[in-house]
Amino acid sequence: MTSYVTSSARAEMSELRRLKTLLPPELQSWVTVEGTTEVNPPLLRCEEIGKDQIEIQIDLVKWDQLALDQRNLLFWHEVARIQNDTIPRDGWEMAALAIGLGGAVGELWVQDGLLLLLALALCGVSGYRLYQKNNGDKQVKEMIEADEKAIALATRFGYSLPNAYKSLGSALKALLEQTPSKRQRSKYETRLTALKRSASKAKAKVKGSREATP
Image 1: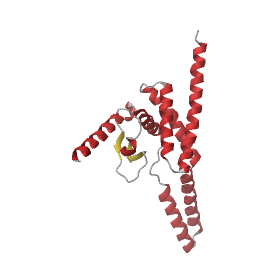
Image 2: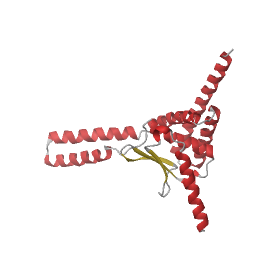
Image 3: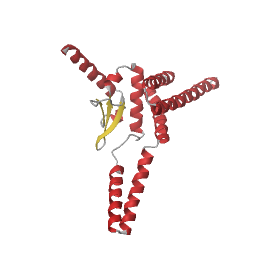
Image 4: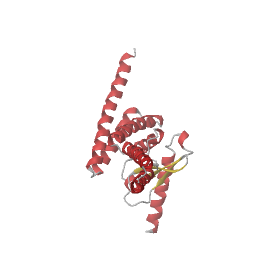
């Protein structure tokens, strides 16, 4: 039993070290890769752990069930989100909303019109920012953009363009099959459709350039 646990821990450490080598050089000094210890965590998640420091957290149990090429493209998708600055951050919105609501209730009691307006304005601004951050369409758009950038990162690390598209497509299909949530499945389906459309355009572009070459 001890031997199995030790070998499993070694395999996990080896995989984390391997993934760190897949970080572009410009990210290696401020992006780290770690296994998560949470109960039922997402497969991959980025978290800001300090000023100018991002950690990619991985559920290594689920991760191990994916093929190597699938892992690579999903990892580069997270890297692309970091590069695009679209990862969730601990913002001020929830705290501001709580302060605004508390202030509004308090000013209703003391009947100070100006402070009431300021409290309501704070609620409005923070509430709108929270809506923007959690907007489903915006999130899907950001995911599709990260998929495109993940393809570019894969080619930068030696993948051919067809293999990069194939690997990411198979990874998304695998996640789609494992996901019971209808809402999350819909996001994967949208990303797959966009990926197929992008692959078709890339294929047509390559074909056109070959035909144009004498």
